[in-house]
Image 1: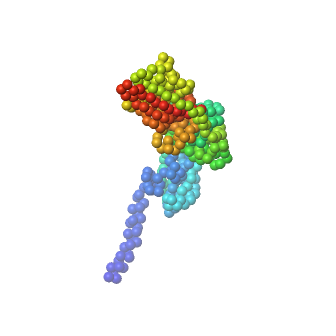
Image 2: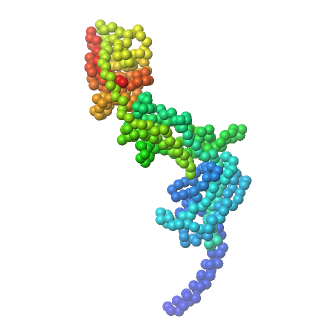
Image 3: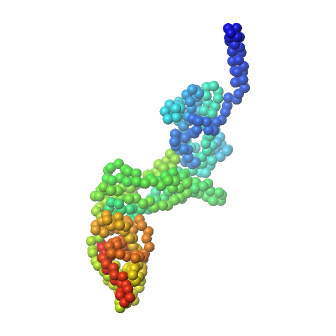
Length: 412
């Protein structure tokens, strides 16, 4: 047994020499596309973009294992397959990243000042002390910086409740018209077409600020444009606990290492506008009832004669049988309040702000439909002022009996 062990010991050095000679025949330059731990060039969890503007610093990072003994990193650039150059060589200077368990090193790279629409290829090579290398490559297109602006200067907000800017209260909705990448193209123009290729915008975020408090994120639109010009209206809701204070809306766009911010003039929030005027009305139809009793004018508070044009007939008795039906003969439209809304005081604490906002948020047809006692309707009269209507009594029609409806309504 001892004799066998002695021979084995003599053979081990020779085996080591043979293995070493085999290793020299292996090519020590290799390119890896998806090795774990060397997955990308971008900042961790942030992908590189498809377009960058001249002068922008691209957030390049490389990852490597400390045991691999990185020597340096070389950056090589090719513009439009014609102009190529080494941008720089940077000594290893990574710091340990606990998430990936690797060294992470930032690599400086700035987009060259070259014409719009050109394709650029960037090769990033990791060179190790043992002579091996790893190549990472990405491409992008040179584009104009993204832009964000209001459609008008100064911005003109759209108050969705139709009230004045000085009458806005908590919960009201304000629309702002914005232009992203004004005049921009989403793709490189094919001659003879002309125009600038713009960077895409990853997100458009809305913030609000009450007084001098920190701003609060209110909403986001993902990928609003890939580069082409986009005019859009963004609705913002006046926040709670802002009554009596100025509220400022801020819009911020993010476009690959670029942040754009615009701020609208402040809105001073006030108490809701009450629907203080209460009126009653009635309409009827059927046997022994004149046609002049079928329609009602909510603005004047009077019966609208049958001979008058339909434009003034806001409430019309269109069904006079066992089921009484109301409709509008003009552009007046109605929203039937839900039982939950009624229980929450939709009618007993009436205000124009809540009624108008509810109408904006709910797309409804002009017809009221079949009615019953205590039905409540939000009303926008002929595309203008808002009212709140409640059914007080309903008498269905029958043979020889006219149908009658009595109601009350609140207005400004």
